[in-house]
Amino acid sequence: MIVLSEHVDYWDRLGWKDPFSSSLFTARQQEYSYRLRGDGVYTPELVVDGQFGFVGSDGSKASSAIQEAMRDPKIPIAMSNVTRDGNQVTVHIEVPAADSGLKSGRGILYLVLADDRAESHVVRGENAGRSLAHVGVARVLKRVGTIDLGAATDRDVTLAIQPGAAANGSRLVAFIQDTKTGHVLAVTAHEL
Image 1 (cartoon, rainbow, N blue to C red):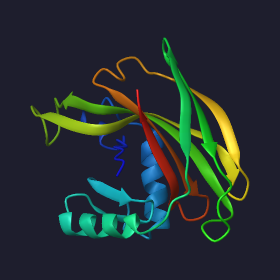
Image 2 (tube, one colour):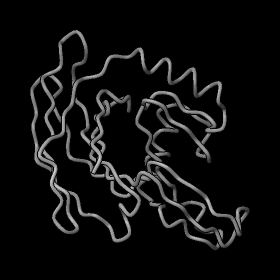
Image 3 (cartoon, one colour):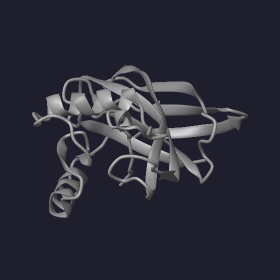
């Protein structure tokens, strides 16, 4: 299981800006709501495998969704030649042609730089005065491009590292989502 926390920015209007929030993550949550026919966006929301969305504190639903996702075979994906030079990380990503019985069509390849753990100190709002611990905090999410799942793909990708990122360990996560459904078709992680 690979966990990513994508912090939305719609709570920033309450007088305290989440240092990890982004309008990109809000847009992704809105897209999930549309695809999963949800009742709008809310927090905490948990999305498993791009196909199950529910209130993140519902342990029973989380367990069921994770078990269901584990039964779904994934396309292999590999990362190699990971190098860091100052504020940039470069990685080589390889995706073999998918078995015709497994997956076909097109997918969107993403690369994410995520902090293993992070903390925020809330100064306003309902959590004012609290320190919140986070895991798998997405700091950079790059849409590498659309790929044909029936053909082998390999790419070298470079990400810029934001100031303050990777202070408590970090990882790269590469994943492919179905262009129509958002279902996660392939995923891998590499510790930095």
